Amino acid sequence: MHNKYTWRTGILEVVMIVVAILFVIPLYLLVNVALRTSNDPASVLALPTQITFDNFARAWVDGNLGNALVNSGIVAVVSTVLIILFSAFAAYPLARSMRRLSKFAYYGFLAGLLLPFQLALIPLYLTMRDIGLLGTVWSLVLFYVGSQMPFSIFLYAGFLRRVPIEYEEAASVDGAGPVGTFWRVVFPLLRPITGTVAILNLINIWNDFFTPLLYLSGSGQQTVPVALYSFFGQYSTEWNIVFAGLLISVAPVLLLYFLLQRTVIQGFASGLKG
Amino acid sequence: MSQMQERLPAAPLQRGAKARKSRRQGVGAMWLFVLPAAAVYLFVVLWPTLQGMALSFTDWDGLSAVKNFVGFDNFALIFADPESFAATWRTILIAVVITVVQNVFGLLLALGVNSRIKSKYALRVALFAPVVIIPVATAYTWRFILAPTGPLNDVLSALGVQNPPDYLGDSQLAIWAVCLVMIWQYSGYSMVIFLAGLQGVPEEIIEASYLDGAGPVRRFWSIIRPELAPALTINLMLSIIGGLRIFDQVWALTNGGPGNSTMTISTQLYQAAFRFGEFGYRAALAVILTLMVAVISGIQYLALRRQNGN
Image (cartoon, rainbow over all chains, first blue to last red):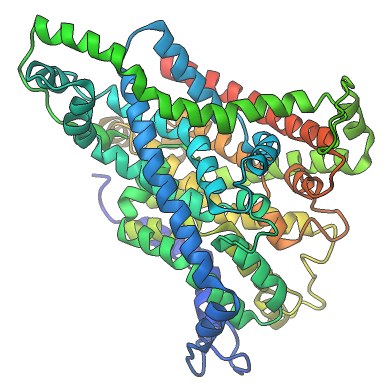
């Protein structure tokens, strides 16, 4: 009986749509300003008088965005692949073994969820300098793989505990070793959670600003958020170009989001962030 | 999470003593599986964290070989330095404001998109979109909106407001602008976590409440609210920790200014990172942040366990 669409539902619908419109106005402005000329007489809230793509070309060249996108892409993809491999492998015995040592190791990893990365970043800065990684994207890859371990292992272990063990037993009977069993039998079963781990890590790493700002400073290398930061420093009055640059930078993640809405939202709804 | 369970494969029927035995041997060998993860985790997280804690009790300048143990001097310096002390309190204020507003707003949005309205799926996608955007990009977008002659003030002027404020240039207002941007970006995040909680409320109980003639407020308070406790705990934890660690939005919106009116613990840490000679002091700042985050996480973890135990 409560599934009827009443006049009250109608009011709620209108209110929610108005709220959502107010909510997405900044995104509308982002696109709208990026697409207009700097001397467009129309209000920024109105559609542009004339649509131009020149801003994108200038942002791309002057903001050195191509280079930054490649760097960010390499860092995000390489880190995520390594995170998936390391955390899935590690979670397997941690979730399956009942020994005390296994429990201890599991909580050792989970402790990392409580530690904000800021404290580790400072001493690690010196270590990275000493081993010659400072100023390269590999310092970021190394940092992300380590710092994203706790929550990735947590997600994998939680999922593994609900996967029936009989699959692995069947594989063992067939003579498969532990690596073969894991790789051919267990890992494919983990595909749903691997998707979640991949998406959350890709987005977190793509968006991170603090770490590359610290570890790439003065090197000439940039990731997307750092490139935006220095680009804004130069063009802060030319909003059309700045916004074109912002749009180029957020496009890959927004695209991923709109293509995989359900998976992305479900992943975040699991309540963990790197 | 319930959807994940549905996608789990069913167990095959094969069992046997032989399989169990070989599995036990396999588990021993599988310690090698943990090795890569453990190695990189120790190297990047645990060891530097311990180093940082140790450094916070020294006067090391970051360059020389001299490292003297100075006890709690660095912490005393932080509390004696009005800038650092103010930044610490400001960080806590931001965290509290964000936590309260974002969760109230997120809950209302979740209730809205969990109703019978037809546009709910589209609205969920739209309201969550800011969460995935680069925080630096979000900050610049808002810098445009909040500029003295930006669209917000254009609208206010059109409505007849005279001399609308310069939100980011006013040392009283800037901190609220920072909170606003954080709340805009992450309310959708709170929303989806509450939504997951709401969807776990059994349909029959809600049906029964209609039959009993309970109104929407009563239904929320007596039936839905208790079921939302775990979602609320997770949300509180995420927003408090997110607030305490805040850096990106502040740095891109205001650079800590005007004056030092929006400096937080993390922006102070970043500034100090480029001033050598203060390594111990900087580490002590990071330790304070770590302790705040760890204590709150610990409380939340215990709260979650208690709720799940019930």
